[in-house]
Image 1 (cartoon, rainbow, N blue to C red):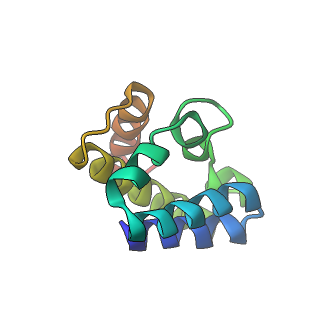
Image 2: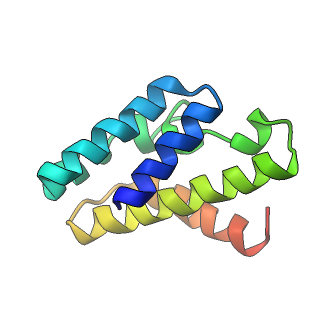
Amino acid sequence: MQEALAQIEQLLRSYGHTYEANLAAIARSAFERDPRAACQTLNSEEWWSSSRSLAAIDLAMDGGYTARSRQDSHALRLSLIEIFTTMRAYGEHNESAEILVSQFHKWLESHI
């Protein structure tokens, strides 16, 4: 989980998504102190539930669909899947996150 949050922070900063990168940094710090509370914090609209959420960011589009930006988008989705899985392990449920993660799995399987 810590690696996933660190990777999300780094990727988002590199594409100019400072606010969202800060959300990842805060979550990472919170997870070190209290994993359950951090997962409750991650279970939010800012992370999962709107077109402006962190999970809705498309690094491939932000990077002009270059090979690198597509790889970064892939890495972001894998990290978000790990975060969702960890949230679930700590008893957190979020329908929007479940739908997004299901879509991420489909995209990853089809290499989109």
